[in-house]
Amino acid sequence: MEPESPLPVEEKAVRPSVPGTLLLVFTLFVTWTMLEGRNPAYLASTASKGSGIGILLSLFMDFKKGWRNMVRADVAALLSLYFLTLFEFLVPQEEVMEGLDVNLIRESLGYIFLGIGGLVCGRHLTSSEKVQRTAIFTADVKPRTMVWLYAGCFVVGYLHMALAVQFNVVDWWHAVLEPRFFQPWSRGRYGDWKAMLTELGMLLYLLPPLMGVVVARLNRYGFWSVVWMGCGTLITFFYGFSTGTRNLFCTYLVTFVIGYMFALKKENDKRILMMAGVAFFLLMLATSQMLHFRQIGFGAYLRGELDEEEANKTLFVDMNLCTLTQVVDYFPRRHDYLGWEIPYLAVIRPIPRAVWPGKPQGMSVSMEQVVGADEAYTVAASFVGEAYMSGGWVGILFSSLFFGALFGWWNRLGTESNSDWGILIYASGFFSAVITMRSLFVFTTAILPTLTALFIGYYLTREIKNRLHHSEPRGFDV
Image (cartoon, rainbow, N blue to C red; front, top):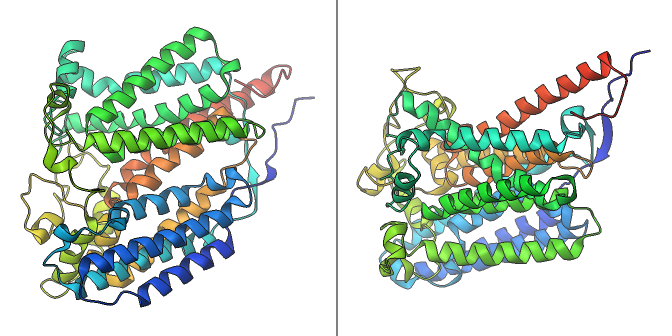
Protein backbone atom coordinates (compact mmCIF):
# COMPACT_ATOMS: atom_id res chain seq x y z
CA MET A 1 0.00 0.00 0.00
CA GLU A 2 1.28 3.46 -0.88
CA PRO A 3 1.75 5.87 2.01
CA GLU A 4 -0.81 8.60 2.23
CA SER A 5 0.12 12.26 2.13
CA PRO A 6 -0.38 14.05 5.43
CA LEU A 7 -3.77 15.68 5.76
CA PRO A 8 -4.32 19.23 7.01
CA VAL A 9 -4.24 19.44 10.80
CA GLU A 10 -6.35 21.83 12.87
CA GLU A 11 -4.27 23.93 15.25
CA LYS A 12 -4.39 27.06 17.34
CA ALA A 13 -3.14 30.24 15.67
CA VAL A 14 -2.04 33.61 17.05
CA ARG A 15 -4.83 36.17 17.08
CA PRO A 16 -5.66 39.62 18.52
CA SER A 17 -7.61 40.12 21.72
CA VAL A 18 -11.10 41.59 21.33
CA PRO A 19 -10.91 43.45 24.69
CA GLY A 20 -7.54 44.84 23.63
CA THR A 21 -8.98 46.21 20.40
CA LEU A 22 -11.95 47.75 22.23
CA LEU A 23 -9.58 49.41 24.71
CA LEU A 24 -7.52 50.88 21.90
CA VAL A 25 -10.53 52.19 19.98
CA PHE A 26 -11.97 53.70 23.16
CA THR A 27 -8.64 55.36 23.98
CA LEU A 28 -8.46 56.83 20.47
CA PHE A 29 -11.96 58.27 20.86
CA VAL A 30 -11.20 59.80 24.27
CA THR A 31 -7.93 61.25 22.99
CA TRP A 32 -9.73 62.73 19.98
CA THR A 33 -12.17 64.57 22.27
CA MET A 34 -9.18 66.05 24.13
CA LEU A 35 -7.62 67.61 21.02
CA GLU A 36 -8.51 71.19 21.80
CA GLY A 37 -6.42 74.34 21.87
CA ARG A 38 -4.50 76.67 19.57
CA ASN A 39 -1.07 75.05 19.80
CA PRO A 40 -0.36 72.53 16.97
CA ALA A 41 2.59 70.99 18.84
CA TYR A 42 0.40 70.38 21.89
CA LEU A 43 -2.29 68.68 19.82
CA ALA A 44 0.25 66.40 18.13
CA SER A 45 1.90 65.55 21.45
CA THR A 46 -1.46 64.76 23.08
CA ALA A 47 -2.42 62.54 20.15
CA SER A 48 0.93 60.74 20.29
CA LYS A 49 0.72 60.04 24.02
CA GLY A 50 -2.96 59.09 24.03
CA SER A 51 -2.74 56.68 21.09
CA GLY A 52 0.52 55.29 22.49
CA ILE A 53 -1.21 54.43 25.76
CA GLY A 54 -4.03 52.77 23.85
CA ILE A 55 -1.58 50.66 21.85
CA LEU A 56 0.25 49.59 25.02
CA LEU A 57 -3.04 48.56 26.64
CA SER A 58 -3.96 46.56 23.56
CA LEU A 59 -0.59 44.82 23.50
CA PHE A 60 -0.88 44.02 27.21
CA MET A 61 -4.18 42.25 26.59
CA ASP A 62 -2.60 40.29 23.73
CA PHE A 63 0.37 39.35 25.93
CA LYS A 64 -1.92 37.56 28.36
CA LYS A 65 -2.07 34.73 25.79
CA GLY A 66 1.71 34.39 25.76
CA TRP A 67 4.58 36.12 24.00
CA ARG A 68 4.02 34.17 20.77
CA ASN A 69 0.65 35.87 20.47
CA MET A 70 2.50 39.18 20.15
CA VAL A 71 4.37 37.99 17.05
CA ARG A 72 1.69 38.96 14.54
CA ALA A 73 1.63 40.84 11.26
CA ASP A 74 -1.08 43.25 12.43
CA VAL A 75 0.99 44.17 15.50
CA ALA A 76 4.00 44.91 13.28
CA ALA A 77 1.82 47.05 11.00
CA LEU A 78 0.24 48.90 13.94
CA LEU A 79 3.59 49.74 15.52
CA SER A 80 4.99 50.78 12.14
CA LEU A 81 2.08 53.15 11.47
CA TYR A 82 2.41 54.69 14.94
CA PHE A 83 6.17 55.07 14.51
CA LEU A 84 5.80 56.75 11.11
CA THR A 85 3.05 59.19 12.08
CA LEU A 86 2.96 59.93 15.82
CA PHE A 87 6.01 58.55 17.64
CA GLU A 88 8.21 61.61 17.05
CA PHE A 89 5.60 63.84 18.71
CA LEU A 90 6.02 62.22 22.12
CA VAL A 91 8.29 65.22 22.54
CA PRO A 92 6.57 68.50 21.52
CA GLN A 93 8.04 69.60 18.18
CA GLU A 94 7.51 73.33 18.66
CA GLU A 95 9.84 74.54 15.90
CA VAL A 96 8.60 72.06 13.30
CA MET A 97 4.91 72.68 14.04
CA GLU A 98 5.19 76.45 14.24
CA GLY A 99 2.89 78.22 11.79
CA LEU A 100 0.79 75.17 10.88
CA ASP A 101 -2.99 75.52 10.83
CA VAL A 102 -4.35 74.02 14.04
CA ASN A 103 -7.61 72.97 12.36
CA LEU A 104 -5.72 71.06 9.67
CA ILE A 105 -3.59 69.40 12.36
CA ARG A 106 -6.65 68.27 14.28
CA GLU A 107 -8.33 66.99 11.12
CA SER A 108 -5.19 65.12 10.07
CA LEU A 109 -4.82 63.54 13.50
CA GLY A 110 -8.42 62.34 13.21
CA TYR A 111 -7.56 60.63 9.91
CA ILE A 112 -4.55 58.92 11.50
CA PHE A 113 -6.78 57.70 14.33
CA LEU A 114 -9.25 56.45 11.72
CA GLY A 115 -6.44 54.55 10.00
CA ILE A 116 -5.33 52.97 13.28
CA GLY A 117 -8.91 52.13 14.26
CA GLY A 118 -9.68 50.58 10.87
CA LEU A 119 -6.49 48.54 11.00
CA VAL A 120 -7.19 47.01 14.43
CA CYS A 121 -10.88 46.41 13.73
CA GLY A 122 -10.23 44.91 10.30
CA ARG A 123 -7.94 42.25 11.73
CA HIS A 124 -10.90 40.64 13.51
CA LEU A 125 -12.76 40.13 10.24
CA THR A 126 -10.45 37.29 9.21
CA SER A 127 -8.70 36.10 12.38
CA SER A 128 -9.57 32.65 13.67
CA GLU A 129 -8.69 30.80 16.86
CA LYS A 130 -8.25 27.48 15.06
CA VAL A 131 -6.89 26.97 11.57
CA GLN A 132 -5.87 24.07 9.35
CA ARG A 133 -2.18 23.54 8.71
CA THR A 134 -1.24 22.17 5.31
CA ALA A 135 1.89 20.39 4.15
CA ILE A 136 3.46 23.56 2.71
CA PHE A 137 3.88 24.85 6.30
CA THR A 138 4.57 21.58 8.10
CA ALA A 139 6.78 19.63 5.66
CA ASP A 140 10.11 18.97 7.38
CA VAL A 141 12.61 20.54 4.99
CA LYS A 142 16.11 19.17 5.51
CA PRO A 143 18.80 21.60 6.72
CA ARG A 144 20.89 21.11 3.56
CA THR A 145 17.89 22.21 1.48
CA MET A 146 17.54 25.35 3.62
CA VAL A 147 21.24 26.08 3.12
CA TRP A 148 20.97 25.75 -0.66
CA LEU A 149 17.87 27.93 -0.71
CA TYR A 150 19.72 30.57 1.31
CA ALA A 151 22.59 30.43 -1.18
CA GLY A 152 20.17 30.84 -4.09
CA CYS A 153 18.44 33.86 -2.54
CA PHE A 154 21.81 35.42 -1.70
CA VAL A 155 23.24 35.03 -5.20
CA VAL A 156 20.10 36.15 -7.06
CA GLY A 157 19.40 38.95 -4.56
CA TYR A 158 22.84 40.54 -5.04
CA LEU A 159 23.07 39.79 -8.76
CA HIS A 160 21.92 43.23 -9.90
CA MET A 161 24.57 44.88 -7.71
CA ALA A 162 27.29 42.51 -8.91
CA LEU A 163 26.46 43.21 -12.55
CA ALA A 164 26.43 46.97 -11.93
CA VAL A 165 30.01 46.87 -10.58
CA GLN A 166 31.14 44.07 -12.93
CA PHE A 167 31.66 41.72 -9.99
CA ASN A 168 34.31 43.98 -8.48
CA VAL A 169 34.07 43.79 -4.68
CA VAL A 170 36.12 46.96 -4.19
CA ASP A 171 33.82 48.93 -6.47
CA TRP A 172 30.81 47.53 -4.58
CA TRP A 173 32.32 48.72 -1.29
CA HIS A 174 32.90 52.23 -2.65
CA ALA A 175 29.36 52.29 -4.06
CA VAL A 176 27.66 51.49 -0.74
CA LEU A 177 29.57 54.37 0.84
CA GLU A 178 27.85 56.83 -1.50
CA PRO A 179 24.64 58.70 -0.54
CA ARG A 180 21.28 57.11 -1.31
CA PHE A 181 20.28 56.82 -4.98
CA PHE A 182 23.88 57.38 -6.16
CA GLN A 183 24.73 53.68 -6.43
CA PRO A 184 25.17 52.31 -9.98
CA TRP A 185 22.48 49.72 -9.30
CA SER A 186 19.87 52.28 -8.20
CA ARG A 187 16.68 51.80 -10.15
CA GLY A 188 15.72 54.65 -12.49
CA ARG A 189 12.43 56.39 -12.00
CA TYR A 190 10.79 54.80 -15.02
CA GLY A 191 12.81 51.60 -15.17
CA ASP A 192 14.08 49.45 -18.05
CA TRP A 193 15.08 45.83 -18.50
CA LYS A 194 17.59 46.23 -15.67
CA ALA A 195 14.69 47.02 -13.34
CA MET A 196 13.63 43.38 -13.69
CA LEU A 197 16.93 42.34 -12.09
CA THR A 198 16.51 45.00 -9.42
CA GLU A 199 13.16 43.49 -8.43
CA LEU A 200 14.93 40.14 -7.91
CA GLY A 201 16.99 41.95 -5.27
CA MET A 202 13.92 41.74 -3.03
CA LEU A 203 14.92 38.12 -2.37
CA LEU A 204 17.39 39.63 0.11
CA TYR A 205 14.41 40.14 2.41
CA LEU A 206 14.25 36.35 2.85
CA LEU A 207 17.79 36.13 4.23
CA PRO A 208 17.26 37.67 7.73
CA PRO A 209 14.19 35.56 8.68
CA LEU A 210 15.87 32.44 7.30
CA MET A 211 18.95 33.16 9.41
CA GLY A 212 16.72 33.75 12.42
CA VAL A 213 15.37 30.22 12.04
CA VAL A 214 18.91 28.85 11.71
CA VAL A 215 20.15 30.66 14.85
CA ALA A 216 17.20 29.29 16.85
CA ARG A 217 17.91 25.73 15.68
CA LEU A 218 21.70 25.67 15.46
CA ASN A 219 21.88 21.99 16.39
CA ARG A 220 20.35 21.08 13.02
CA TYR A 221 22.95 22.90 10.91
CA GLY A 222 26.63 22.26 10.29
CA PHE A 223 29.28 24.61 11.65
CA TRP A 224 30.56 25.90 8.30
CA SER A 225 27.05 26.33 6.95
CA VAL A 226 26.20 28.53 9.92
CA VAL A 227 29.44 30.51 9.48
CA TRP A 228 28.97 31.42 5.82
CA MET A 229 25.24 32.03 6.22
CA GLY A 230 26.04 34.27 9.17
CA CYS A 231 28.56 36.20 7.07
CA GLY A 232 25.98 36.60 4.31
CA THR A 233 23.44 37.92 6.81
CA LEU A 234 25.95 40.36 8.31
CA ILE A 235 26.70 41.67 4.81
CA THR A 236 22.97 42.14 4.26
CA PHE A 237 22.54 43.99 7.56
CA PHE A 238 25.54 46.15 6.73
CA TYR A 239 24.11 46.96 3.31
CA GLY A 240 20.75 47.89 4.88
CA PHE A 241 22.48 50.10 7.44
CA SER A 242 24.75 51.79 4.88
CA THR A 243 21.79 52.95 2.80
CA GLY A 244 20.60 55.20 5.64
CA THR A 245 17.08 53.92 4.97
CA ARG A 246 15.73 53.09 8.40
CA ASN A 247 12.70 51.22 7.07
CA LEU A 248 15.00 48.82 5.25
CA PHE A 249 17.27 48.12 8.21
CA CYS A 250 14.34 47.83 10.63
CA THR A 251 12.62 45.35 8.34
CA TYR A 252 15.75 43.19 8.20
CA LEU A 253 16.00 43.23 11.98
CA VAL A 254 12.29 42.62 12.64
CA THR A 255 12.03 39.67 10.25
CA PHE A 256 15.20 38.14 11.75
CA VAL A 257 13.71 38.34 15.25
CA ILE A 258 10.33 36.98 14.08
CA GLY A 259 12.01 33.96 12.47
CA TYR A 260 14.07 33.40 15.62
CA MET A 261 11.14 33.68 18.02
CA PHE A 262 8.88 31.28 16.17
CA ALA A 263 11.64 28.73 15.63
CA LEU A 264 12.67 28.71 19.28
CA LYS A 265 11.09 26.21 21.65
CA LYS A 266 8.49 27.49 24.05
CA GLU A 267 10.53 26.90 27.21
CA ASN A 268 13.33 29.28 26.16
CA ASP A 269 11.73 32.47 27.47
CA LYS A 270 15.05 33.87 28.71
CA ARG A 271 16.59 33.64 25.25
CA ILE A 272 13.51 35.34 23.80
CA LEU A 273 13.78 38.25 26.23
CA MET A 274 17.51 38.54 25.61
CA MET A 275 17.07 38.57 21.82
CA ALA A 276 14.22 41.10 22.06
CA GLY A 277 16.34 43.35 24.29
CA VAL A 278 19.39 43.19 22.00
CA ALA A 279 17.24 43.80 18.92
CA PHE A 280 15.56 46.83 20.51
CA PHE A 281 18.93 48.28 21.53
CA LEU A 282 20.34 47.79 18.02
CA LEU A 283 17.19 49.28 16.52
CA MET A 284 17.43 52.45 18.61
CA LEU A 285 21.20 52.76 18.13
CA ALA A 286 21.12 52.17 14.38
CA THR A 287 18.15 54.42 13.61
CA SER A 288 19.69 57.30 15.56
CA GLN A 289 23.10 56.92 13.91
CA MET A 290 21.59 56.62 10.43
CA LEU A 291 20.33 60.18 10.76
CA HIS A 292 23.96 61.30 10.72
CA PHE A 293 24.58 60.11 7.17
CA ARG A 294 21.36 59.31 5.34
CA GLN A 295 21.78 62.44 3.19
CA ILE A 296 25.58 62.53 2.90
CA GLY A 297 26.44 58.83 2.61
CA PHE A 298 28.03 56.25 4.89
CA GLY A 299 31.50 57.05 3.53
CA ALA A 300 31.28 60.59 4.86
CA TYR A 301 30.16 59.19 8.22
CA LEU A 302 33.25 56.96 8.39
CA ARG A 303 35.44 59.98 7.61
CA GLY A 304 33.99 61.77 10.61
CA GLU A 305 31.60 64.02 8.69
CA LEU A 306 28.17 64.21 10.32
CA ASP A 307 24.89 65.64 9.12
CA GLU A 308 24.20 67.43 12.40
CA GLU A 309 21.13 69.21 11.01
CA GLU A 310 19.38 65.85 10.60
CA ALA A 311 20.79 64.22 13.73
CA ASN A 312 19.87 67.10 16.05
CA LYS A 313 16.18 66.77 15.27
CA THR A 314 14.67 65.33 18.44
CA LEU A 315 12.96 61.99 17.83
CA PHE A 316 12.86 62.80 14.14
CA VAL A 317 11.26 60.16 11.90
CA ASP A 318 9.75 61.60 8.72
CA MET A 319 7.24 64.21 9.88
CA ASN A 320 4.48 62.44 7.98
CA LEU A 321 1.88 64.34 9.99
CA CYS A 322 3.10 67.65 8.54
CA THR A 323 2.92 66.24 5.02
CA LEU A 324 -0.55 64.88 5.71
CA THR A 325 -1.80 68.33 6.72
CA GLN A 326 -0.73 69.66 3.31
CA VAL A 327 -2.47 66.76 1.60
CA VAL A 328 -5.66 67.43 3.57
CA ASP A 329 -5.46 71.08 2.63
CA TYR A 330 -5.02 70.23 -1.07
CA PHE A 331 -7.74 67.56 -1.50
CA PRO A 332 -10.56 68.19 -2.30
CA ARG A 333 -10.24 71.96 -1.86
CA ARG A 334 -7.87 72.45 -4.80
CA HIS A 335 -8.12 69.14 -6.61
CA ASP A 336 -10.65 66.31 -6.70
CA TYR A 337 -9.79 63.01 -5.06
CA LEU A 338 -7.82 60.69 -7.35
CA GLY A 339 -10.26 57.80 -6.91
CA TRP A 340 -9.20 54.40 -8.26
CA GLU A 341 -6.04 55.85 -9.80
CA ILE A 342 -3.94 55.05 -6.73
CA PRO A 343 -5.10 51.40 -6.27
CA TYR A 344 -4.63 50.82 -10.00
CA LEU A 345 -1.07 52.18 -9.96
CA ALA A 346 -0.30 50.05 -6.91
CA VAL A 347 -1.52 46.88 -8.65
CA ILE A 348 0.52 47.43 -11.82
CA ARG A 349 3.66 48.63 -10.02
CA PRO A 350 5.53 45.25 -10.16
CA ILE A 351 5.22 45.09 -13.97
CA PRO A 352 8.57 46.22 -15.48
CA ARG A 353 8.43 48.95 -18.10
CA ALA A 354 10.53 46.71 -20.33
CA VAL A 355 7.53 44.39 -20.51
CA TRP A 356 4.93 47.19 -20.70
CA PRO A 357 6.43 50.28 -22.38
CA GLY A 358 3.14 52.16 -22.11
CA LYS A 359 2.89 51.71 -18.36
CA PRO A 360 1.64 54.90 -16.58
CA GLN A 361 4.50 56.96 -15.18
CA GLY A 362 2.87 57.97 -11.92
CA MET A 363 -0.02 59.79 -10.30
CA SER A 364 -1.63 62.69 -12.09
CA VAL A 365 -0.87 64.71 -8.94
CA SER A 366 2.13 63.48 -6.98
CA MET A 367 2.81 63.90 -3.28
CA GLU A 368 5.83 66.02 -4.18
CA GLN A 369 3.65 68.41 -6.20
CA VAL A 370 1.20 68.73 -3.32
CA VAL A 371 3.88 69.81 -0.84
CA GLY A 372 5.92 71.77 -3.39
CA ALA A 373 9.02 69.61 -3.10
CA ASP A 374 11.64 68.87 -5.74
CA GLU A 375 10.71 65.79 -7.80
CA ALA A 376 14.18 64.40 -7.06
CA TYR A 377 13.08 63.82 -3.45
CA THR A 378 10.62 61.26 -2.17
CA VAL A 379 7.88 62.59 0.11
CA ALA A 380 5.67 60.29 2.18
CA ALA A 381 2.55 60.75 4.28
CA SER A 382 2.08 57.07 5.21
CA PHE A 383 -0.63 54.94 3.61
CA VAL A 384 -3.16 57.17 5.40
CA GLY A 385 -2.16 60.13 3.23
CA GLU A 386 -2.30 58.13 0.01
CA ALA A 387 -5.66 56.63 0.93
CA TYR A 388 -6.95 60.14 1.65
CA MET A 389 -5.75 61.33 -1.77
CA SER A 390 -7.72 58.46 -3.25
CA GLY A 391 -11.05 58.94 -1.51
CA GLY A 392 -10.92 61.08 1.62
CA TRP A 393 -11.96 59.53 4.92
CA VAL A 394 -13.84 56.79 3.05
CA GLY A 395 -10.61 55.81 1.30
CA ILE A 396 -8.79 55.68 4.66
CA LEU A 397 -11.51 53.57 6.26
CA PHE A 398 -11.68 50.97 3.51
CA SER A 399 -7.90 50.83 3.01
CA SER A 400 -7.24 50.31 6.72
CA LEU A 401 -9.98 47.69 7.01
CA PHE A 402 -8.54 45.89 3.98
CA PHE A 403 -5.00 45.79 5.33
CA GLY A 404 -6.23 44.91 8.81
CA ALA A 405 -8.22 41.98 7.41
CA LEU A 406 -5.28 40.88 5.28
CA PHE A 407 -2.85 40.90 8.19
CA GLY A 408 -5.43 39.19 10.40
CA TRP A 409 -5.67 36.43 7.82
CA TRP A 410 -1.89 36.14 7.64
CA ASN A 411 -1.79 35.55 11.40
CA ARG A 412 -3.61 32.27 10.76
CA LEU A 413 -0.37 30.94 9.31
CA GLY A 414 1.56 31.46 12.55
CA THR A 415 1.47 28.26 14.62
CA GLU A 416 4.03 26.49 16.79
CA SER A 417 4.26 23.40 14.56
CA ASN A 418 5.42 25.27 11.47
CA SER A 419 8.50 23.74 9.87
CA ASP A 420 11.65 25.78 9.26
CA TRP A 421 10.36 26.78 5.82
CA GLY A 422 6.87 27.43 7.19
CA ILE A 423 8.33 29.84 9.74
CA LEU A 424 10.30 31.57 6.98
CA ILE A 425 7.15 32.07 4.91
CA TYR A 426 5.27 33.48 7.90
CA ALA A 427 8.13 35.79 8.96
CA SER A 428 8.68 37.10 5.43
CA GLY A 429 5.12 38.45 5.41
CA PHE A 430 6.09 40.95 8.09
CA PHE A 431 8.15 42.83 5.52
CA SER A 432 5.08 43.84 3.53
CA ALA A 433 3.12 44.54 6.74
CA VAL A 434 5.75 47.01 7.96
CA ILE A 435 6.69 48.73 4.73
CA THR A 436 3.11 49.10 3.42
CA MET A 437 2.35 51.42 6.31
CA ARG A 438 4.75 53.92 4.76
CA SER A 439 3.23 53.65 1.30
CA LEU A 440 0.50 51.38 -0.05
CA PHE A 441 2.19 51.62 -3.47
CA VAL A 442 4.92 49.23 -2.35
CA PHE A 443 2.55 46.53 -1.11
CA THR A 444 2.36 44.65 -4.41
CA THR A 445 6.14 44.54 -4.72
CA ALA A 446 6.72 43.89 -1.01
CA ILE A 447 4.77 40.62 -1.17
CA LEU A 448 6.95 39.25 -3.99
CA PRO A 449 9.55 37.65 -1.64
CA THR A 450 6.74 35.97 0.28
CA LEU A 451 5.12 34.73 -2.92
CA THR A 452 8.51 33.37 -3.96
CA ALA A 453 8.85 31.53 -0.65
CA LEU A 454 5.33 30.12 -1.08
CA PHE A 455 6.14 28.96 -4.61
CA ILE A 456 9.34 27.26 -3.46
CA GLY A 457 7.44 25.70 -0.56
CA TYR A 458 4.81 24.39 -2.95
CA TYR A 459 7.53 22.87 -5.13
CA LEU A 460 9.23 21.25 -2.12
CA THR A 461 5.91 19.83 -0.90
CA ARG A 462 5.19 18.38 -4.31
CA GLU A 463 8.61 16.73 -4.37
CA ILE A 464 7.96 15.29 -0.93
CA LYS A 465 4.67 13.80 -2.06
CA ASN A 466 6.31 12.30 -5.14
CA ARG A 467 8.95 10.61 -2.98
CA LEU A 468 6.31 9.29 -0.62
CA HIS A 469 4.47 7.68 -3.51
CA HIS A 470 7.55 6.16 -5.15
CA SER A 471 9.54 4.87 -2.20
CA GLU A 472 9.23 3.45 1.28
CA PRO A 473 8.31 6.19 3.75
CA ARG A 474 11.32 7.47 5.66
CA GLY A 475 9.80 10.58 7.16
CA PHE A 476 8.12 13.59 5.66
CA ASP A 477 11.17 15.57 4.59
CA VAL A 478 13.11 16.72 1.58
